[in-house]
Length: 324
Image 1 (tube, helix red, strand yellow):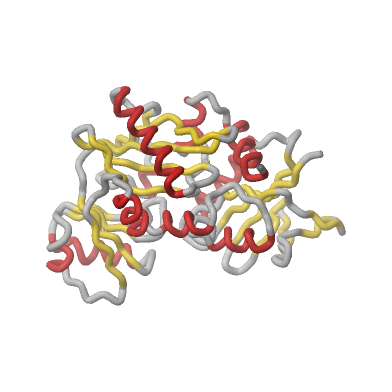
Image 2 (cartoon, one colour):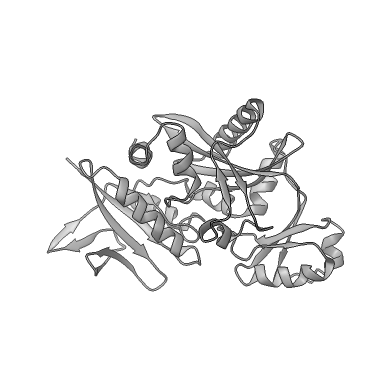
């Protein structure tokens, strides 16, 4: 019997547009002989099943929908929702309460990895290399001099919670710091100021595949802009995304081993993506993405394909692992 899969998308942040694209790709490649796919869009105003141009409300008591007088219940949720409430653990808490399996990390890990400062603090204690950083909130009275006493220029300023590099800036001069912080604080309540490490940007997807943790291929990002921001990730075609990365085999092995270690150490589930900077053959952690992009241009599907795992198998495996 085919399983009913709710592909949850949308969300409450500026990443909703990417979530919708990820959901379309997931629905496109999931095996129709195994799964009945339903696109569930979440916004602050409503939760609805979207099909054939019509919207049907979701019953939040048990996460079901009524279609043609018949109540449809779901066997599993495929999480294709970037940003809040999917990537910060809030939605996972709801699904845990009603006993609904889902394809992403759980509440605690999602909340931790959504907060860049908490992620850095946790993993640095486990021996992972990280950049110097400081967190600033709207309530703080920190001046540019206060921040620069802890972090050197140049530096990156970005929202402490959030993804797709929304609100991110590279700061080279002291007078640019406060405007960059104001930009980041328009996106979130906290900003993280992170010391710039000059090197090559790498990213590695990790999945639980057939019961075992598996690092996929490593990708290298060669960005024409100084910041690999939202435009560079999804709009500007001048950015090169090279899979596999042009790195020595020893660095490739180290990056894969480290990525699998982080997956296990944090207790991750489903599929994640970890971003690094490589400087002088040393890996520095940037961040952990608990629900990575799944669009046609996204890294994890590219990396899986290079590792011999088709999109159909990648997405189907995520469901079967969640159900297991």
